[in-house]
Length: 296
Image (cartoon, rainbow, N blue to C red; front, top):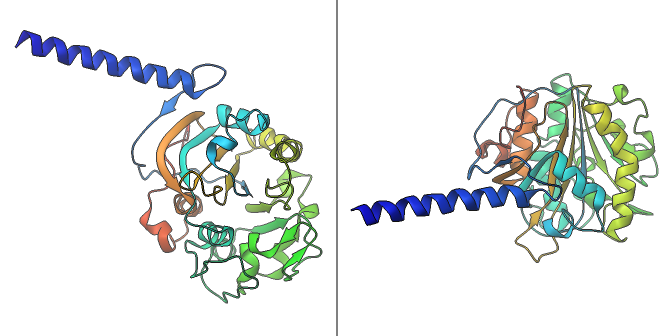
């Protein structure tokens, strides 16, 4: 009996030691708070004045977070709420954008252009119907409301809102229209960089530098203006079970490394709950991101 008790106590001590080591390893600059719930819990998130969501391309988690060629994104992951186990839904790119924007891949399983999805329910339309505002900003989009398939580094397959007839053309803006005065941002903004700055065609260090220049000032502002920044990817490069980076920064966000298994539907679930919108499609069957909030 005494021997069994000693063995159990030793195993417990080893578990505590191992957990402590995991905390240290999570942050390159030292211990970072780690929240490792195996499943998410449904929590009531705050209602930000502004959310900016940036979606990048085709990189597995460990090819970005902690990689020496992406120092800014890696630093953001250490100092914000980093989702350790976030996954895309499928391959190729286009269905993942639709999943985040509407709660469904809408039966799309390719990168073809165009897909015309009519008046199906989507997050942008929901925001507008609830008297919030929504705008999608696409780098290299040649003009407001343009519905073509490609122009310079812009591709329609990375722009989900243009496929829905119930999202007004005025919400489909070139990135150059992104406000310099952040207080003039819409309630929710989606930003789609061009094929170079989204890590698709150019070296990822070039995208990392561009992201820092474009969004580090906004993140600093957001922390004191009830606003959020969300960085995510569409899919991995088909080498790590679609494991992708996703990071949330801004006001009321508790820094940490969060271990719940998540996907774009969880993120949409949380966004819809922020603005008291009906949960759509697969988002209704998710619990959302973990409790990353310092207050709700």
